[in-house]
Length: 108
Image 1 (cartoon, helix red, strand yellow):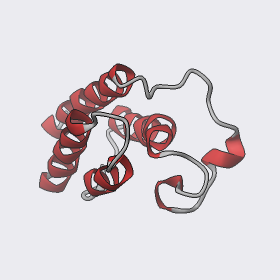
Image 2 (cartoon, rainbow, N blue to C red):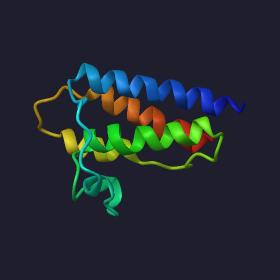
Image 3 (cartoon, one colour):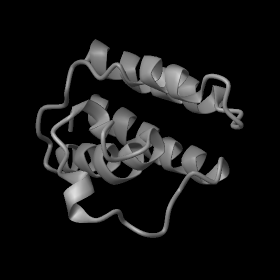
Image 4 (tube, rainbow, N blue to C red):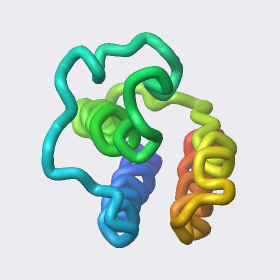
């Protein structure tokens, strides 16, 4: 298997762990209609942490497990920087992790 799959899989595990550490992980899945948004990052229906948990992680896991092509650009870190700006969360580690994901996917 291509090493990128192992690298990205490890980053996905770290992402889940960081969302849990920040207490942003939710036990209840949002209704299907909220997950079906066609807007980037589901900005009209989900919070960024919800999108990461319920859309991004499952899609990336599916691509990795199927050894299907991964996106070569994500650009999630800048969105996270804006989302968490001035908020109550200390999200620096999450933003750094998202930047690592962006960089690894871009390198292919």
